[in-house]
Image (cartoon, rainbow, N blue to C red; front, side, top):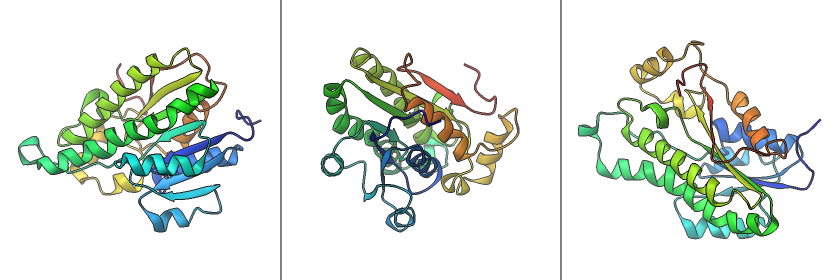
Length: 240
């Protein structure tokens, strides 16, 4: 039996591949009208039959985000999965522009989509926001300063906004995955990937569908007494 009530709508960013794609398809299968958004137009078009609508979207552009949300109409569930890893180098080799771009996508993009949707959720008295953070945001990964810093900030953003709307029927939570088998991580430097795997007691990559299962619950009425929380899905890596 689905956890979800028919006729609710979801916006999933970063939906063209990896975790975002798995979440978009899972929520659509469970009866939500899913708007899938990403910059990867070709990959989005491949899932046009799986979701209600597809949208080419740069989440760093607030005006574009607001226009997309206006075009979608009601958004009951927001899943923020758009993200980039950025350069995998020590801080003394990290270009400022690349650091700023990583924060712009991972952090400001999350801020923009929440800002564009949360007022209407509050008016309706119901909403679910799920931000995809990372275990790197809790523990830090070496040679991933932009990614680790941005995901730590997403966790802080989640906790803050979750408290702001705790009495409005809008629940805001984050997920902190360890390394997941996604196209984004296929480009991870081998030594960085080896480091991340060495930290996982289960000694394997996580799967996008495993993350989608957790997102589905957090996006539903079954999740009713949790907000501003961070859910680890790390194969045992998380230590706090």
